[in-house]
Length: 334
Image (cartoon, rainbow, N blue to C red; front, side):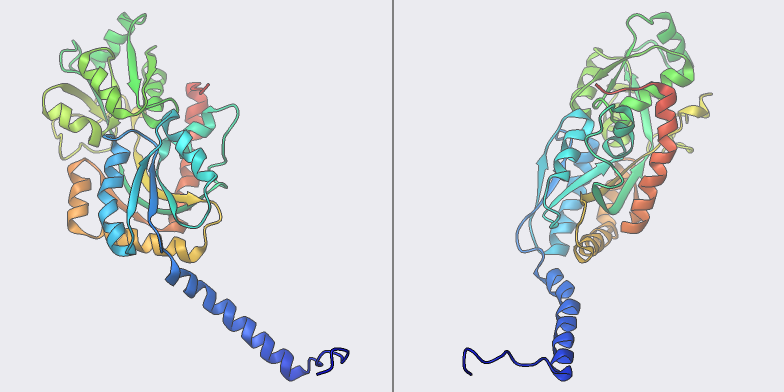
């Protein structure tokens, strides 16, 4: 064809063929995308030090995810600010499914409502992929503490208001808010002592440097059963099967202390739906395994199998529930 000749006229037939070709490519691309992913290791961020409850969730899920997705899942620890630093880092990651995070209530529901300047919007800056587990909390004191019950601890805290304190796994974490909730409900003035994760908080509690920690069973149950800590109450509506002798907050006379925590897998905002569903399905298969369910149960947690849409709605409802509690407590993050 002469270079000066006009381009071929786009007849109706040619236009129809081009449109069909584009439609076929568009329909095939999600399937091709899903088949191509993952083709390299996946990073699973834990916003707390090794040895805590969130670390246990990551390790429970890691083998099943690797098997279901056919790729290595590498756990990476990014502790600090009660998980807020890791969550903020996740917002800067590419939404390609290769960077995920084990979420919990602290950085995704509680901390943003305590901060004057929010580092992220929990309802806009993340992709909620799958809720995996949940549990209530245990309030524990050192084994040699004079208080044997919650009522006795409240009386002791009021009599020692200048020195009485409580530990947390980090400012803005659920362990922080649980302590503030006790102050609000019981009228105590416990001073907040934050740590970089639950593991170091437990060690100082055992040593008597702090006086109370309200944390998940994963963290506290082994120390209670080993005689190094004493449980005062649990925050669930029913007693924990692993600690049947420990009363609930309601039974102890303080129903306002009821609370529960949860965990799940999230990614950056804008993840492709096909990848989200691949990860969600892999988690669903993992959570269905009996050995995985037993591991969660052994640590006082229950499997909560919620997919992307239900998980997203759940987090929104949690934000609405806890925001007025945070405002009433006056808890703030620097």
